[in-house]
Image (cartoon, rainbow, N blue to C red):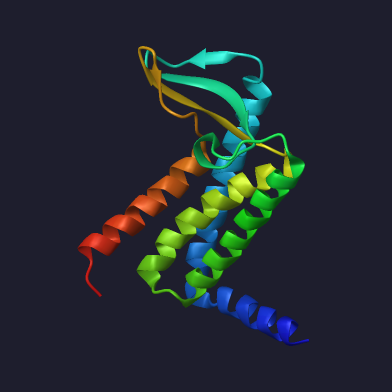
Length: 166
């Protein structure tokens, strides 16, 4: 019974008036990612689209975590990693609730992207990555819109910790 009271407190804390902007931002980021993935899956599932000499749309399915790490055919490992990712999102949501406004912006960006990739893991059992940056024969890791937001949020978080004194 205590867990239900605790969850109710978290819900009330998340839905505070001051958090509405950040929740909307998180939802917008989530939907930007979902829409981009749906369009790529619909239109580029079997083909590569070349923007220019440096950027392609090339759909690949990643069942690992960032940059294909921990890719496996084992459903046990996949489900364990998915559970851990879900718990990290819950933890970040808690941190979001107790943070200052500037930090809430950073966590909103990260959580929005993380929710996009997490939902793919649940729906597709893999994450569709499709942005292929390359120069000649060197290809960077293929990524998606959610990865852009997660990475941007983490970079902002790190830079803020170096340059902003509390």
